[in-house]
Image 1 (cartoon, one colour):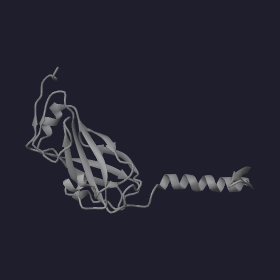
Image 2 (cartoon, helix red, strand yellow):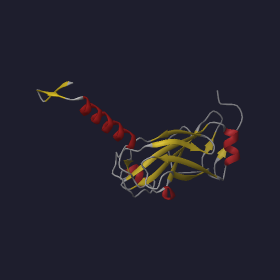
Image 3 (spheres, one colour):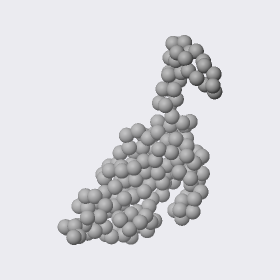
Length: 173
């Protein structure tokens, strides 16, 4: 096989192509270097349609979706690739997980009390308010199967605040 590199024509043998493909596939599967995450230090933000905040004393009305942002501190540099496989939570849905670490030194992260180089971010959503109301005051377990987390999978206890007011009934028109 002939390829052009920097204006020069290079001949590759079949074994060269196989070796390049094998190395490329192995790098894609393993992703980045292993990173340390600290799920026991996770912090949370709450949003039901009017912006994310730390305050847990919120009212969720019919038609609202409660979203809980989970910020898991990491000592990896920002923008380090993260490989999360099969995220799950006891109730609700995992609606987002970051594909790379996010800068932990921004002012918004400092507002949440985060003091680490970066965070792994996940979002848990609840749109069934009857189920949500039954969960008030409990901790759900968010499981992130991280193929490049040191120590394997990360589990985070996600608190459903006891001060939260969930109004059930029909949605607002």
